[in-house]
Every structure is written in C-alpha cells, then in structure tokens.
Length: 381
Ligand code: SF4
Ligand code: F3S
Image (tube, rainbow, N blue to C red):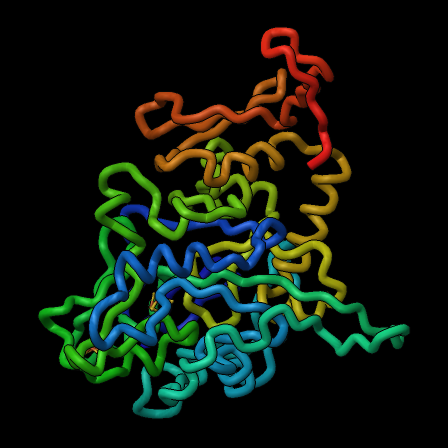
C-alpha cells in the first residue's frame, strides 16, 4: 500500500491511494462544553435530508451521550476493541501513534478493519441518554468515581483519508476539491463496503433505493457562503465551520487553524483510527476521567483540556472570542480578530465584516419605575 503522512498521528501510514490532498479541506470545531444535547441539529438535518423512504433510521447528524450513549450501538467500543493496543509517545514535542490504524490492522484482502452493524444497532439512538458515568446512589457517593457525562454531536468527518472512499469497489465515493466526501449516487451499487469500513458509521445504506447515502456537509449552502443546516440551527452555539490548513501552514486569523493548531484547544475524534477526521472537538473540561478523554480524542485531547482550562483562567480573549463567534452568524467566515475594547469580529474571504459580538455581554438594569409607560417593573417572574 502507498504511504501517506497523517499529521494527527505524527507519522506516515498505509492508505490505498497516494496522498493527494484536496486544494482545501472543509472542517469544523465543536465546543463540547456548550453542547446541551437538545438534538436541534439532529432534527434540522433529518428534516432537510433524510425524511424519505428508506431513510427512516438514518441520522446523518446525531448527538450521543458519553460515556454510555452510541449510535449505532457500540460503534466506538467495537472498533476500538478490534483495533488492539493504542499507545502514543511524545517525540520532539509531537505525539506519535505507535499502534495500528484501521488500514494497517486490516486482514489480507481487506482495505480496512471494520464491521457491518446489524439493523437493530440503529434502533436506539438515545441509548444511555443523561446517564452519568457511574451509578449515583441516593444519599451518598462512593469514592473514587466522579459522576459526569457529556454530549457528543457527530456528523461525517469528511476525513482526509476516508475509509469509506478507500473501500468502495465501485469507486463511487469521491472527495471534492474542498475536501467534502460524497457518494456518487449514479455509480453506487450498494456493496456496503463503505458502511463496513467507516469506523464512525456515517455512511448509511438505503434499503429502498439500494444505494448508500451520507452527510454532504450541506455543500449547496456552503457554495453560497452559508453554514450547514445542523450548524445554523445549533442552539448551544457550539459549531464553527471553516477550512483547516496543515499545521505548518496554520494561519492565526483562521478560526479553525487558531483553535486546532495554534492554541491547541480542539482535537479530532479517535485520531488513532488513522483517517485524519476533520471535525475537531473542544473536549469537555469538567469530565473527571482523563483516560476517557485520551481514548476519545487522543493525548492531544488531554492537552486540549489543559490548554482550554488555562485559557479560561487567564481570560485569553482570543480563545474566548474565537469560540464566542460560533453560530453568531449564518455566514461562513474565513478570518476573525478580537479588538482591545472587547469585540470578536468575523470576516468573509473578501475581507468584509460578517458579524461582531461583544465578548462580555452588556448588562442593562431597567429602572423600577418606567416614566414613559407609567408602570412599575418587577424583575421576578
Ligand atoms: Fe467516510 Fe466515515 Fe470519514 Fe465520513 S467519517 S469521510 S463516511 S470514513
Ligand atoms: Fe461503494 Fe458503498 Fe455504494 S461500497 S458501491 S458506495 S454502498
């Protein structure tokens, strides 16, 4: 197999196609500290793209609760158990993955390690919802557990090295010049190798049309300069859409580069699988179990927790400003800056201002007696 360089695992790895990267790579940052698990994103996607026949079970965007939730059932536990040891070592300031990726762990004749979920695995998207990491018994807590949970919104990661694309015998999956991964509906013949090998289980087989479908990153909206539906409807304001550069070309004005490469407060989901996924997560900083964070986001995830905690302690206005801009506009923005007087401002690719947000929300105290209306106001509800 040809070798490609995967910066998320700090080394070269085997991949069926030689490493031609797209002109640019669509990407996202999701701040898990703000996700409230409301599923508005899930419904926005569902009503836009998967309300047809054969799509009933599909959730291109889902939100699962960790540690107990998963959709399809046990997707992460299964692939991580199949993969074997996942050790990392720091070399020259960079994390290097010493285990095998799913491409390297494949059996002879296979493109990548994988499994086909059963139909019933998709039947319980809300499993484990709002269950803490350990049973809480009324009246007392037994050390050493710390009850915690967090919501994990998931879409296709539009991976740099997609397993779905690599596995399709029909070459029906392709990556556009902007990095978005699509299934060519005319070429697909329903072999489902993509469903089997995508470890994130983000390709879905439609039993009515007998071809597969997946998240398209709402490219018709993006092409018009608007963010995807699930981003646009996000009530928790956790999502930033943009384009990511390679670490060596990181641009501090690009919000995705800034959060991922420069401040290192966001990390990819299961980087050890080797796909270079392009949805980056600001991990939850109140989760008590760093082993869990390390398993889900690699050692960069643990560092991201430390970096983000530090940024909040120091009141790093650039980090706070970059995150506060999330979902503050429907438009795609390419650059941002934070002004000395406390504004976070986003600009489009042409340099025009798209939105400005105060970093500290102004507080207005209404007078008890409104002279204009001649009424007394009460501040209780
Ligand atoms: Fe393909 Fe899965 Fe990666 Fe999406 S997340 S690009 S479906 S391998
Ligand atoms: Fe290929 Fe998946 Fe279709 S493997 S043929 S894209 S179902």
